[in-house]
Image (cartoon, rainbow, N blue to C red; front, side):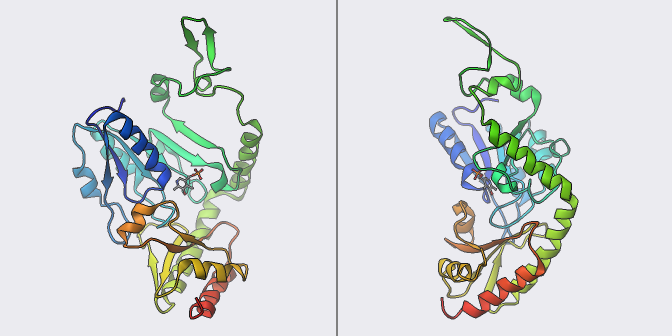
Amino acid sequence: MIINGQDEILVSQMEHHSNIVPWQMLCHKKGSRIVPIPINDKGEIILEEYEKLFSPRTKMVAITQVSNVLGTINPIREIVAIAHSHGVCVLVDGAQAAPHLSTDVRELDADFYTLSGHKMYGPTGIGVLYGKKALLDSMPPWQGGGGMIKDVDFDKTVYMDLPYKFEAGTGNIADAVALGTAVDYIEEIGMNNIECHEQELTKYAMEALSAIKGSYTIGNAYNKTSVLSFILDGVSPQKMAELLDSEGIAVRAGHHCAQPVLKHFGLSSTLRASIGLYNTYEDIDALVKGIIKHRYKS
Ligand SMILES: *Cc1c(COP(=O)(O)O)cnc(C)c1O
């Protein structure tokens, strides 16, 4: 799988910038292009439109399992199957799925799968790139250095087998240990327990937020997880976030590193509450109370 010339990479409209910009940089270098996979107004991938985008030029699909703005859980199994029926590989961004859903990369049949340590209660600056063995075997190293070679001469180098050929230099050992501890912590609580707890709170919060006058939830997919974006009529998200923060209620305001999806909804900024395994019904009540208290001040 080499991307060149007129080739196309299908990238969904709900991607985080980190699953758009690197592909764009590659396309810029190779003269190839990104084709956006459209979404509907609930924030779901339109599968029929997705399927129509495939042509002999399509070389890769890059898509998130869960949107960090909409909370949408994409039907990755189906998306991958469609791509594979056209002989195209899929990279799945699992940054938001890993902390919220139990996921089996083999069951999804993803060719590549990524996740970030700091989204799952682990350290920053470290994550996981999973790839199918045959694909990784066929790929050249992306960096050169020590610890990744079998034999070096001035006219040629023979690389080590997987995973070492991709691990040049001394790695970030301490954070890898810490990430392992974070994974143990999640597994101890149980991914299914986390999923159930977050699903219940999400339902409760979606209802509570939409009951606030002049409040609109962005991202109303049938399958969604605990990422809740919303806007309030005539209220600046930034100002509201500051007011809530002053009461110890942490929401984020902004474009959430996913400008194309906000543009789809005609927005440049939303408020976003992200529910984690540590949140409670009382937290949601406090959020709603805080919004109602401050909405005419912001
Ligand atoms: C946070 C996030 C990323 C980026 O991960 P970093 O480790 O912060 O670079 C990518 N995709 C999604 C969906 C995210 O939520």
